[in-house]
Amino acid sequence: MRMPPPTTKEDVTMDTVMGSLPNVWQTSLQMTSIWLLCHPQPDKVPLGHHQEEYFSGPEPKAVLRQFQTDLDKLEKEIVARNEQLDLPYEHLKPSLIENTRLAGNNTLDVFQKHREQELEERQQIYCWATWKEGLPMTIAAGSIDDLPPNMRFHEQKRLDYEWTVIAGLMEMALKYVYTLLSPWKRLEDFDQIFWGQKTAMAEKVHQRWQDDELFGYQFLNGTNPMLLRRSTSLPSRLVLPSGMEELRAQLEKELQKGSLFEADFILLDGIPANVVQGEKQYLAAPLVMLKMEPSGKLLPIVIQIQPPSPSCPTPPLFLPSDPPLAWLLAKSWVRSSDFHVHELQYHLLHTHLLAEVIAVATMRCLPGLHPVFKLLIPHTRYTMDINTRARNQLISDGGLFDKVRSTGGGGHVQLIRRAMTQLTYRSLCPPDDLADRGLLGIPSALYAHDALRLWEIIARYVEGIVHLFYHGDDIVRGDPELQAWCREITEVGLCQAQDRGEIPP
Image 1 (spheres, rainbow, N blue to C red):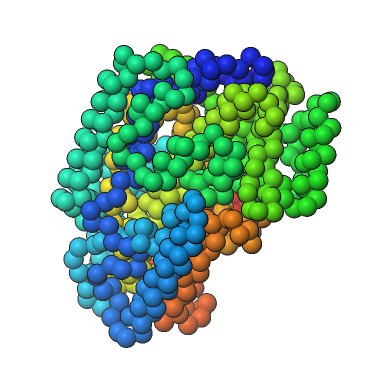
Image 2 (cartoon, rainbow, N blue to C red):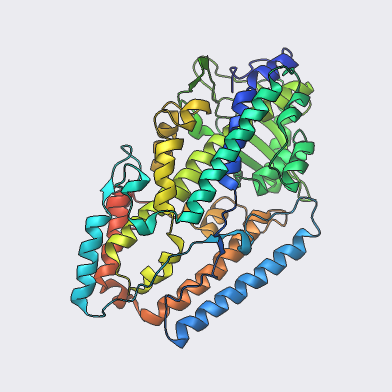
Protein backbone atom coordinates (compact mmCIF):
# COMPACT_ATOMS: atom_id res chain seq x y z
CA MET A 1 0.00 0.00 0.00
CA ARG A 2 1.16 3.57 -0.68
CA MET A 3 -0.07 5.31 2.47
CA PRO A 4 0.15 4.34 6.16
CA PRO A 5 -2.83 2.54 7.72
CA PRO A 6 -5.58 4.96 8.79
CA THR A 7 -5.68 5.94 12.45
CA THR A 8 -9.13 7.52 12.30
CA LYS A 9 -12.32 6.63 10.47
CA GLU A 10 -13.94 9.99 9.90
CA ASP A 11 -11.10 11.42 7.80
CA VAL A 12 -11.06 8.67 5.16
CA THR A 13 -11.97 10.10 1.76
CA MET A 14 -11.83 8.83 -1.79
CA ASP A 15 -8.42 10.52 -2.10
CA THR A 16 -7.27 8.50 0.94
CA VAL A 17 -8.48 5.24 -0.60
CA MET A 18 -6.99 5.90 -4.05
CA GLY A 19 -3.77 7.19 -2.53
CA SER A 20 -3.43 3.97 -0.50
CA LEU A 21 -4.15 1.52 -3.30
CA PRO A 22 -1.46 0.67 -5.89
CA ASN A 23 -1.11 3.14 -8.73
CA VAL A 24 -1.92 2.23 -12.33
CA TRP A 25 1.64 1.03 -13.08
CA GLN A 26 1.80 -1.20 -10.01
CA THR A 27 -1.71 -2.52 -10.62
CA SER A 28 -1.04 -3.33 -14.26
CA LEU A 29 2.23 -5.08 -13.45
CA GLN A 30 0.64 -7.10 -10.65
CA MET A 31 -2.25 -8.13 -12.89
CA THR A 32 0.25 -9.23 -15.53
CA SER A 33 2.35 -11.22 -13.06
CA ILE A 34 -0.72 -13.00 -11.68
CA TRP A 35 -1.83 -13.85 -15.22
CA LEU A 36 1.61 -15.29 -15.98
CA LEU A 37 1.52 -17.42 -12.85
CA CYS A 38 -1.94 -18.77 -13.70
CA HIS A 39 -1.44 -19.24 -17.45
CA PRO A 40 -2.23 -22.86 -18.46
CA GLN A 41 0.66 -24.68 -20.08
CA PRO A 42 0.29 -26.41 -23.48
CA ASP A 43 1.79 -29.68 -22.23
CA LYS A 44 -0.30 -29.95 -19.06
CA VAL A 45 -1.16 -33.50 -18.09
CA PRO A 46 -3.96 -33.97 -15.50
CA LEU A 47 -3.07 -35.59 -12.20
CA GLY A 48 -2.77 -39.38 -12.46
CA HIS A 49 -2.93 -39.52 -16.25
CA HIS A 50 0.73 -39.42 -17.28
CA GLN A 51 1.50 -41.57 -20.30
CA GLU A 52 4.73 -43.05 -18.95
CA GLU A 53 4.55 -46.44 -17.28
CA TYR A 54 6.90 -46.31 -14.31
CA PHE A 55 5.59 -49.51 -12.73
CA SER A 56 5.44 -52.89 -14.45
CA GLY A 57 3.31 -55.79 -13.34
CA PRO A 58 -0.45 -56.09 -12.90
CA GLU A 59 -0.67 -55.12 -9.21
CA PRO A 60 0.73 -51.57 -9.42
CA LYS A 61 -1.11 -50.94 -12.69
CA ALA A 62 -4.37 -51.93 -11.02
CA VAL A 63 -3.67 -49.46 -8.20
CA LEU A 64 -3.03 -46.71 -10.78
CA ARG A 65 -6.24 -47.51 -12.66
CA GLN A 66 -8.23 -47.25 -9.42
CA PHE A 67 -6.49 -43.92 -8.72
CA GLN A 68 -7.59 -42.60 -12.10
CA THR A 69 -11.16 -43.88 -11.54
CA ASP A 70 -11.34 -42.14 -8.16
CA LEU A 71 -10.08 -38.87 -9.66
CA ASP A 72 -12.62 -39.02 -12.48
CA LYS A 73 -15.40 -39.63 -9.95
CA LEU A 74 -14.31 -36.63 -7.88
CA GLU A 75 -14.19 -34.51 -11.04
CA LYS A 76 -17.81 -35.35 -11.83
CA GLU A 77 -18.89 -34.63 -8.24
CA ILE A 78 -17.24 -31.19 -8.29
CA VAL A 79 -18.73 -30.32 -11.70
CA ALA A 80 -22.22 -31.32 -10.54
CA ARG A 81 -21.88 -29.34 -7.32
CA ASN A 82 -20.54 -26.25 -9.06
CA GLU A 83 -23.52 -26.17 -11.40
CA GLN A 84 -25.64 -25.33 -8.34
CA LEU A 85 -23.30 -22.60 -7.03
CA ASP A 86 -23.24 -18.92 -7.85
CA LEU A 87 -19.50 -18.88 -7.13
CA PRO A 88 -18.18 -22.27 -8.29
CA TYR A 89 -15.03 -23.59 -6.63
CA GLU A 90 -12.77 -25.23 -9.21
CA HIS A 91 -9.24 -24.91 -7.78
CA LEU A 92 -9.02 -28.61 -6.82
CA LYS A 93 -10.73 -30.18 -9.82
CA PRO A 94 -8.42 -33.10 -10.70
CA SER A 95 -8.32 -32.08 -14.38
CA LEU A 96 -6.90 -28.70 -13.35
CA ILE A 97 -4.19 -30.18 -11.10
CA GLU A 98 -1.12 -30.57 -13.21
CA ASN A 99 0.95 -33.68 -13.46
CA THR A 100 4.25 -33.30 -15.26
CA ARG A 101 5.90 -35.34 -17.93
CA LEU A 102 9.29 -36.98 -17.99
CA ALA A 103 10.61 -37.85 -21.40
CA GLY A 104 12.49 -41.08 -21.76
CA ASN A 105 12.86 -44.42 -20.03
CA ASN A 106 14.23 -45.04 -16.56
CA THR A 107 14.91 -48.75 -16.96
CA LEU A 108 18.23 -49.57 -15.33
CA ASP A 109 20.32 -52.60 -14.46
CA VAL A 110 18.86 -54.24 -11.36
CA PHE A 111 22.19 -54.99 -9.71
CA GLN A 112 23.04 -53.07 -6.59
CA LYS A 113 26.35 -51.75 -7.89
CA HIS A 114 24.54 -50.11 -10.78
CA ARG A 115 22.09 -48.44 -8.36
CA GLU A 116 25.04 -47.10 -6.41
CA GLN A 117 26.79 -45.90 -9.55
CA GLU A 118 23.63 -44.14 -10.71
CA LEU A 119 23.35 -42.25 -7.42
CA GLU A 120 27.04 -41.32 -7.42
CA GLU A 121 26.66 -39.80 -10.88
CA ARG A 122 23.45 -38.00 -9.94
CA GLN A 123 25.01 -36.56 -6.78
CA GLN A 124 27.67 -34.94 -8.96
CA ILE A 125 24.98 -33.41 -11.17
CA TYR A 126 22.35 -32.44 -8.59
CA CYS A 127 24.16 -30.39 -5.95
CA TRP A 128 22.76 -28.26 -3.12
CA ALA A 129 23.15 -24.51 -2.80
CA THR A 130 22.10 -21.84 -0.31
CA TRP A 131 19.99 -19.09 -1.83
CA LYS A 132 19.39 -17.19 1.42
CA GLU A 133 20.41 -18.16 4.95
CA GLY A 134 17.57 -19.64 6.97
CA LEU A 135 15.62 -20.74 3.89
CA PRO A 136 15.37 -24.20 2.30
CA MET A 137 18.31 -25.32 0.20
CA THR A 138 18.00 -25.16 -3.57
CA ILE A 139 19.53 -26.76 -6.64
CA ALA A 140 22.98 -25.37 -7.40
CA ALA A 141 22.20 -23.51 -10.62
CA GLY A 142 22.99 -19.87 -11.31
CA SER A 143 20.74 -19.94 -14.37
CA ILE A 144 18.54 -22.37 -16.24
CA ASP A 145 21.54 -23.18 -18.47
CA ASP A 146 23.22 -24.73 -15.42
CA LEU A 147 20.37 -27.20 -14.88
CA PRO A 148 20.56 -30.81 -16.06
CA PRO A 149 18.88 -31.02 -19.48
CA ASN A 150 16.14 -33.36 -18.18
CA MET A 151 15.06 -30.72 -15.66
CA ARG A 152 14.67 -27.83 -18.12
CA PHE A 153 11.55 -26.77 -20.00
CA HIS A 154 11.35 -28.65 -23.27
CA GLU A 155 11.26 -26.52 -26.41
CA GLN A 156 7.49 -26.16 -26.78
CA LYS A 157 7.02 -25.24 -23.16
CA ARG A 158 9.95 -22.81 -23.22
CA LEU A 159 8.58 -21.01 -26.27
CA ASP A 160 5.09 -20.83 -24.81
CA TYR A 161 6.44 -19.49 -21.51
CA GLU A 162 8.56 -16.83 -23.17
CA TRP A 163 5.75 -15.77 -25.53
CA THR A 164 3.37 -15.56 -22.56
CA VAL A 165 5.82 -13.23 -20.83
CA ILE A 166 6.10 -11.03 -23.93
CA ALA A 167 2.31 -10.92 -24.42
CA GLY A 168 1.78 -10.04 -20.77
CA LEU A 169 4.33 -7.23 -20.86
CA MET A 170 2.78 -5.85 -24.04
CA GLU A 171 -0.67 -5.84 -22.44
CA MET A 172 0.74 -4.11 -19.35
CA ALA A 173 2.40 -1.43 -21.49
CA LEU A 174 -0.83 -0.83 -23.44
CA LYS A 175 -2.82 -0.45 -20.24
CA TYR A 176 -0.30 2.01 -18.86
CA VAL A 177 -0.29 4.11 -22.04
CA TYR A 178 -4.09 3.97 -22.25
CA THR A 179 -4.41 5.50 -18.78
CA LEU A 180 -1.76 8.20 -19.12
CA LEU A 181 -4.30 10.84 -20.11
CA SER A 182 -7.15 9.39 -18.06
CA PRO A 183 -8.07 10.25 -14.48
CA TRP A 184 -7.07 7.87 -11.69
CA LYS A 185 -9.07 9.33 -8.86
CA ARG A 186 -12.08 7.03 -8.36
CA LEU A 187 -12.50 3.31 -7.79
CA GLU A 188 -14.34 3.10 -11.12
CA ASP A 189 -11.13 4.18 -12.85
CA PHE A 190 -9.71 0.68 -12.23
CA ASP A 191 -12.15 -0.50 -14.92
CA GLN A 192 -9.84 1.13 -17.46
CA ILE A 193 -7.34 -1.71 -17.03
CA PHE A 194 -9.78 -4.54 -16.36
CA TRP A 195 -9.64 -5.97 -19.84
CA GLY A 196 -7.61 -8.60 -21.66
CA GLN A 197 -7.09 -11.97 -20.01
CA LYS A 198 -9.85 -12.66 -17.46
CA THR A 199 -12.21 -15.43 -16.42
CA ALA A 200 -15.89 -15.65 -15.55
CA MET A 201 -14.94 -15.85 -11.87
CA ALA A 202 -12.74 -12.75 -12.21
CA GLU A 203 -15.71 -10.89 -13.67
CA LYS A 204 -17.91 -11.91 -10.74
CA VAL A 205 -15.26 -10.79 -8.25
CA HIS A 206 -14.93 -7.53 -10.17
CA GLN A 207 -18.65 -6.87 -9.70
CA ARG A 208 -18.77 -7.84 -6.00
CA TRP A 209 -15.35 -7.11 -4.56
CA GLN A 210 -16.72 -4.51 -2.13
CA ASP A 211 -19.34 -6.88 -0.65
CA ASP A 212 -18.79 -8.22 2.86
CA GLU A 213 -20.12 -11.61 1.79
CA LEU A 214 -17.43 -12.04 -0.86
CA PHE A 215 -14.81 -10.70 1.55
CA GLY A 216 -15.64 -13.51 3.99
CA TYR A 217 -16.07 -16.12 1.24
CA GLN A 218 -12.49 -15.57 0.10
CA PHE A 219 -11.14 -16.72 3.46
CA LEU A 220 -12.96 -20.03 3.02
CA ASN A 221 -12.67 -20.62 -0.71
CA GLY A 222 -10.50 -17.90 -2.24
CA THR A 223 -6.90 -17.88 -3.36
CA ASN A 224 -5.65 -18.23 0.22
CA PRO A 225 -7.90 -20.47 2.36
CA MET A 226 -4.94 -21.35 4.61
CA LEU A 227 -5.17 -18.65 7.28
CA LEU A 228 -8.73 -18.81 8.59
CA ARG A 229 -9.32 -20.66 11.87
CA ARG A 230 -12.18 -21.12 14.30
CA SER A 231 -11.62 -19.04 17.42
CA THR A 232 -11.22 -20.82 20.75
CA SER A 233 -10.85 -17.55 22.68
CA LEU A 234 -10.75 -13.86 21.92
CA PRO A 235 -7.27 -13.00 20.57
CA SER A 236 -5.05 -11.24 23.12
CA ARG A 237 -4.10 -8.62 20.53
CA LEU A 238 -7.75 -7.57 20.12
CA VAL A 239 -7.91 -4.63 22.55
CA LEU A 240 -11.51 -3.50 23.02
CA PRO A 241 -11.66 0.06 24.38
CA SER A 242 -14.43 1.41 26.53
CA GLY A 243 -17.58 2.04 24.54
CA MET A 244 -17.19 -1.28 22.68
CA GLU A 245 -19.24 -3.36 25.14
CA GLU A 246 -21.78 -4.25 22.46
CA LEU A 247 -19.02 -5.54 20.19
CA ARG A 248 -17.50 -7.58 23.02
CA ALA A 249 -20.89 -9.11 23.77
CA GLN A 250 -21.35 -10.04 20.10
CA LEU A 251 -17.90 -11.62 19.88
CA GLU A 252 -18.41 -13.63 23.07
CA LYS A 253 -21.82 -14.80 21.90
CA GLU A 254 -20.41 -16.04 18.58
CA LEU A 255 -17.50 -17.63 20.46
CA GLN A 256 -19.85 -19.62 22.70
CA LYS A 257 -21.84 -20.77 19.66
CA GLY A 258 -18.64 -21.92 17.92
CA SER A 259 -19.36 -19.57 15.02
CA LEU A 260 -16.50 -17.10 15.61
CA PHE A 261 -13.55 -17.22 13.21
CA GLU A 262 -10.36 -15.22 12.84
CA ALA A 263 -7.62 -14.49 10.33
CA ASP A 264 -4.45 -13.09 11.90
CA PHE A 265 -1.71 -11.65 9.68
CA ILE A 266 0.76 -11.19 12.54
CA LEU A 267 3.45 -12.78 10.35
CA LEU A 268 3.74 -9.38 8.64
CA ASP A 269 4.34 -7.43 11.85
CA GLY A 270 7.66 -5.62 11.70
CA ILE A 271 8.53 -6.67 8.13
CA PRO A 272 10.23 -3.66 6.47
CA ALA A 273 8.35 -2.14 3.56
CA ASN A 274 9.81 -1.48 0.12
CA VAL A 275 10.42 1.75 -1.80
CA VAL A 276 8.94 1.59 -5.32
CA GLN A 277 10.00 4.18 -7.88
CA GLY A 278 11.11 6.46 -5.07
CA GLU A 279 7.79 6.16 -3.23
CA LYS A 280 7.74 4.60 0.23
CA GLN A 281 5.36 1.65 0.61
CA TYR A 282 3.57 0.42 3.74
CA LEU A 283 2.67 -2.92 5.28
CA ALA A 284 0.25 -3.88 8.03
CA ALA A 285 -0.49 -6.98 10.11
CA PRO A 286 -4.32 -7.02 10.34
CA LEU A 287 -6.60 -9.17 12.45
CA VAL A 288 -10.07 -9.99 11.13
CA MET A 289 -12.86 -11.45 13.26
CA LEU A 290 -15.72 -13.08 11.37
CA LYS A 291 -18.96 -14.89 12.16
CA MET A 292 -20.46 -17.90 10.44
CA GLU A 293 -24.17 -17.50 9.81
CA PRO A 294 -26.52 -20.52 9.79
CA SER A 295 -26.70 -20.18 6.00
CA GLY A 296 -22.94 -20.78 5.75
CA LYS A 297 -22.07 -17.18 4.93
CA LEU A 298 -18.91 -15.91 6.63
CA LEU A 299 -19.18 -12.20 7.44
CA PRO A 300 -16.65 -9.81 8.99
CA ILE A 301 -17.41 -8.35 12.41
CA VAL A 302 -14.36 -6.21 13.12
CA ILE A 303 -10.95 -5.42 11.60
CA GLN A 304 -7.87 -4.33 13.52
CA ILE A 305 -5.34 -3.16 10.92
CA GLN A 306 -2.28 -3.09 13.20
CA PRO A 307 -1.53 -4.92 16.47
CA PRO A 308 -1.05 -2.95 19.69
CA SER A 309 2.33 -1.25 20.10
CA PRO A 310 3.96 1.05 22.65
CA SER A 311 3.12 4.03 20.45
CA CYS A 312 -0.46 2.86 19.91
CA PRO A 313 -1.61 0.53 22.71
CA THR A 314 -5.24 0.69 21.55
CA PRO A 315 -5.32 0.51 17.75
CA PRO A 316 -8.52 1.65 16.04
CA LEU A 317 -11.11 -1.01 15.27
CA PHE A 318 -13.06 -0.84 12.02
CA LEU A 319 -16.65 -2.05 11.85
CA PRO A 320 -19.18 -2.67 9.05
CA SER A 321 -21.23 0.20 10.52
CA ASP A 322 -18.39 2.69 9.99
CA PRO A 323 -18.43 5.20 7.11
CA PRO A 324 -18.38 3.12 3.90
CA LEU A 325 -14.99 4.36 2.66
CA ALA A 326 -13.33 3.73 6.03
CA TRP A 327 -14.68 0.17 6.12
CA LEU A 328 -13.67 -0.39 2.49
CA LEU A 329 -10.14 0.86 3.17
CA ALA A 330 -9.82 -1.48 6.17
CA LYS A 331 -10.88 -4.45 4.02
CA SER A 332 -8.41 -3.35 1.32
CA TRP A 333 -5.60 -3.46 3.87
CA VAL A 334 -6.63 -7.01 4.73
CA ARG A 335 -6.68 -8.10 1.08
CA SER A 336 -3.26 -6.49 0.51
CA SER A 337 -1.82 -8.34 3.52
CA ASP A 338 -3.45 -11.57 2.39
CA PHE A 339 -1.69 -11.27 -0.96
CA HIS A 340 1.76 -11.02 0.64
CA VAL A 341 1.20 -13.93 3.05
CA HIS A 342 -0.28 -16.13 0.34
CA GLU A 343 2.41 -15.43 -2.24
CA LEU A 344 5.38 -15.78 0.11
CA GLN A 345 4.37 -18.29 2.78
CA TYR A 346 1.88 -20.62 1.15
CA HIS A 347 2.80 -20.31 -2.52
CA LEU A 348 6.55 -19.72 -2.63
CA LEU A 349 7.65 -21.52 0.55
CA HIS A 350 5.09 -24.29 1.01
CA THR A 351 4.81 -25.06 -2.71
CA HIS A 352 7.85 -24.10 -4.76
CA LEU A 353 10.70 -24.24 -2.25
CA LEU A 354 9.58 -27.37 -0.41
CA ALA A 355 8.89 -29.13 -3.70
CA GLU A 356 12.42 -28.30 -4.85
CA VAL A 357 13.91 -29.81 -1.70
CA ILE A 358 12.03 -33.05 -2.32
CA ALA A 359 12.91 -33.02 -6.03
CA VAL A 360 16.65 -32.56 -5.44
CA ALA A 361 16.72 -35.12 -2.61
CA THR A 362 14.88 -37.60 -4.83
CA MET A 363 17.43 -37.25 -7.62
CA ARG A 364 20.34 -37.56 -5.18
CA CYS A 365 19.12 -40.47 -3.05
CA LEU A 366 16.67 -42.68 -4.94
CA PRO A 367 17.70 -44.73 -8.00
CA GLY A 368 15.35 -45.03 -10.93
CA LEU A 369 14.17 -48.50 -9.88
CA HIS A 370 13.09 -47.39 -6.42
CA PRO A 371 9.28 -47.43 -5.98
CA VAL A 372 9.24 -44.04 -4.23
CA PHE A 373 11.26 -42.56 -7.11
CA LYS A 374 8.66 -43.90 -9.54
CA LEU A 375 5.85 -42.43 -7.45
CA LEU A 376 7.43 -38.98 -7.28
CA ILE A 377 9.17 -38.48 -10.61
CA PRO A 378 6.02 -37.58 -12.61
CA HIS A 379 5.57 -34.60 -10.25
CA THR A 380 9.09 -33.16 -10.17
CA ARG A 381 9.59 -32.23 -13.79
CA TYR A 382 10.16 -28.45 -14.26
CA THR A 383 10.27 -27.74 -10.51
CA MET A 384 13.95 -26.82 -10.67
CA ASP A 385 13.53 -24.85 -13.90
CA ILE A 386 10.65 -22.67 -12.75
CA ASN A 387 12.27 -22.07 -9.35
CA THR A 388 15.57 -21.09 -10.94
CA ARG A 389 13.74 -18.64 -13.18
CA ALA A 390 11.96 -17.23 -10.11
CA ARG A 391 15.24 -16.70 -8.25
CA ASN A 392 16.65 -14.89 -11.27
CA GLN A 393 13.64 -12.82 -12.29
CA LEU A 394 10.96 -12.68 -9.59
CA ILE A 395 12.48 -12.74 -6.11
CA SER A 396 16.06 -11.80 -7.01
CA ASP A 397 17.73 -8.53 -6.11
CA GLY A 398 16.18 -6.05 -8.53
CA GLY A 399 13.54 -8.59 -9.59
CA LEU A 400 9.79 -8.15 -9.90
CA PHE A 401 9.20 -8.20 -6.14
CA ASP A 402 11.71 -5.40 -5.65
CA LYS A 403 10.17 -3.40 -8.48
CA VAL A 404 6.50 -3.53 -7.50
CA ARG A 405 5.69 -5.34 -4.23
CA SER A 406 5.53 -3.69 -0.83
CA THR A 407 7.39 -6.69 0.60
CA GLY A 408 10.20 -6.35 -1.95
CA GLY A 409 13.62 -4.96 -1.19
CA GLY A 410 14.40 -7.67 1.35
CA GLY A 411 11.15 -7.79 3.29
CA HIS A 412 10.04 -10.81 1.29
CA VAL A 413 13.12 -12.77 2.38
CA GLN A 414 12.54 -11.87 6.03
CA LEU A 415 8.91 -12.96 5.77
CA ILE A 416 9.82 -16.34 4.22
CA ARG A 417 12.52 -16.84 6.86
CA ARG A 418 9.98 -16.11 9.60
CA ALA A 419 7.45 -18.48 7.99
CA MET A 420 10.15 -21.16 7.80
CA THR A 421 10.51 -21.15 11.60
CA GLN A 422 6.78 -21.81 11.90
CA LEU A 423 6.69 -24.65 9.37
CA THR A 424 5.24 -27.90 10.71
CA TYR A 425 4.58 -31.24 9.11
CA ARG A 426 0.93 -31.10 10.26
CA SER A 427 0.42 -27.81 8.41
CA LEU A 428 1.30 -29.59 5.15
CA CYS A 429 -1.29 -32.36 5.63
CA PRO A 430 -4.87 -31.16 4.94
CA PRO A 431 -6.63 -33.52 7.40
CA ASP A 432 -4.40 -32.37 10.27
CA ASP A 433 -4.26 -28.73 9.18
CA LEU A 434 -8.02 -28.39 8.74
CA ALA A 435 -8.67 -30.13 12.06
CA ASP A 436 -6.19 -27.86 13.84
CA ARG A 437 -7.94 -24.82 12.36
CA GLY A 438 -11.42 -26.06 13.25
CA LEU A 439 -12.65 -26.12 9.65
CA LEU A 440 -13.93 -29.69 9.38
CA GLY A 441 -17.60 -30.29 8.74
CA ILE A 442 -18.46 -26.81 7.42
CA PRO A 443 -20.74 -27.23 4.36
CA SER A 444 -19.72 -23.88 2.83
CA ALA A 445 -15.99 -24.65 3.17
CA LEU A 446 -15.56 -25.92 -0.39
CA TYR A 447 -11.76 -25.87 -0.29
CA ALA A 448 -11.77 -28.03 2.85
CA HIS A 449 -14.21 -30.51 1.30
CA ASP A 450 -12.32 -30.86 -2.00
CA ALA A 451 -8.89 -30.93 -0.34
CA LEU A 452 -9.93 -33.81 1.95
CA ARG A 453 -11.45 -35.81 -0.90
CA LEU A 454 -8.38 -35.30 -3.06
CA TRP A 455 -6.07 -36.16 -0.15
CA GLU A 456 -7.98 -39.40 0.48
CA ILE A 457 -7.72 -40.42 -3.17
CA ILE A 458 -4.00 -39.65 -3.40
CA ALA A 459 -3.29 -41.33 -0.04
CA ARG A 460 -5.15 -44.47 -1.14
CA TYR A 461 -3.07 -44.59 -4.34
CA VAL A 462 0.25 -44.03 -2.56
CA GLU A 463 -0.55 -46.56 0.16
CA GLY A 464 -1.60 -49.08 -2.48
CA ILE A 465 1.74 -48.79 -4.26
CA VAL A 466 3.88 -48.61 -1.11
CA HIS A 467 2.28 -51.68 0.48
CA LEU A 468 3.25 -53.73 -2.57
CA PHE A 469 6.91 -53.14 -1.74
CA TYR A 470 6.97 -52.52 2.02
CA HIS A 471 5.14 -55.13 4.10
CA GLY A 472 6.16 -53.76 7.49
CA ASP A 473 8.00 -51.03 9.37
CA ASP A 474 11.13 -53.16 9.61
CA ILE A 475 11.42 -53.15 5.81
CA VAL A 476 11.07 -49.35 5.78
CA ARG A 477 13.78 -49.00 8.43
CA GLY A 478 15.98 -51.45 6.57
CA ASP A 479 15.89 -49.58 3.25
CA PRO A 480 19.13 -47.52 3.21
CA GLU A 481 18.12 -45.55 0.10
CA LEU A 482 14.79 -44.51 1.61
CA GLN A 483 16.42 -43.59 4.94
CA ALA A 484 19.07 -41.53 3.14
CA TRP A 485 16.32 -39.74 1.22
CA CYS A 486 14.48 -38.81 4.44
CA ARG A 487 17.68 -37.53 6.05
CA GLU A 488 18.56 -35.55 2.94
CA ILE A 489 15.21 -33.74 3.07
CA THR A 490 15.17 -32.87 6.77
CA GLU A 491 18.85 -32.53 7.66
CA VAL A 492 20.11 -30.93 4.43
CA GLY A 493 17.30 -29.49 2.32
CA LEU A 494 15.27 -28.17 5.27
CA CYS A 495 18.35 -27.10 7.25
CA GLN A 496 18.12 -29.46 10.24
CA ALA A 497 14.34 -29.01 10.48
CA GLN A 498 14.07 -32.14 12.62
CA ASP A 499 15.87 -30.29 15.43
CA ARG A 500 12.94 -27.87 15.72
CA GLY A 501 10.66 -30.73 16.66
CA GLU A 502 7.90 -30.00 14.16
CA ILE A 503 9.27 -31.98 11.21
CA PRO A 504 9.77 -35.72 11.75
CA PRO A 505 13.40 -36.90 11.37
